[in-house]
Length: 374
Image (cartoon, rainbow, N blue to C red):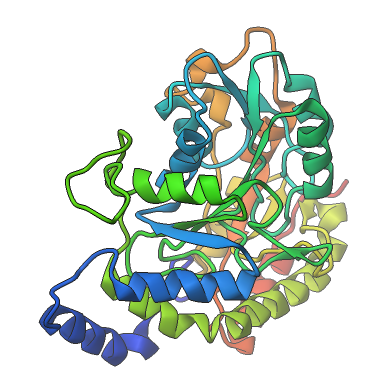
């Protein structure tokens, strides 16, 4: 691909710094490669940036979700309401603590979970609701917060794709009792490997997550296990690398938003041809991925590939239709908007080092697609 969807050069500008970091961490006298002083500084920097009481870095965004649920004592006999459209960890984290995922349908345009669908899914067994921000739009967190308070259930915010987004003055990750971020390579704050973080103002959740990420140890004495935990520890090389990249995050996010603004302006007239861009604006937006909804999605994908432009389908199948989670799909219930999103969605390149000319080339190619008149 001339313009790949997953660019191979995301960290080229930081290559020498990365190699130097590996040398310094590897040759340091303390020989501390996980959960050391660099991880503590990284957690502190994120706390300051977010205005949160605590941040706990862990092995991935996936395990971050599971650690939060475990820290809340959610398990067998409990239900957690999750979106029917999204990434597998939304449901897997629930199943892996022994609880049952209950799938709620999403909005047909924004693809974030619908509050009324969430409320209809709440039962006497519901322990938590877990909305997820999706691609370029945050979930309706004020309403989710009100629902959780009114029904006296926990609110976990899957903000894995939304770091840097802000809604009503509140950053993504700060709306729930706990939120999670993912630092996997292609995220807005992606790194050189796996990684994630839990964000919370609740000291008990933070304390329990810290123990759970490190086999149930509290950090004061090795081999004393207060809980049955996991190995979800953060790497010192990545901690220092992310500390370096944190300073440029706002600039990279702004560039993503500029590209998204341009795309949306160019694609707005295509609605009559069966191509729907996301809603315009900056409020509550997180341009990790820029996704179109296209009636002839597969044809559009081929059209762009012929022009050297890589695309990606997030996600081809709703969660309740996946083999792994089909046993949890309620009989007689349907998720039509999730199914429609899976059939129509197509993500375009939006990484921040795209040039203006490259962005224009991508937009021109989309606009050249004949579509289907409505």
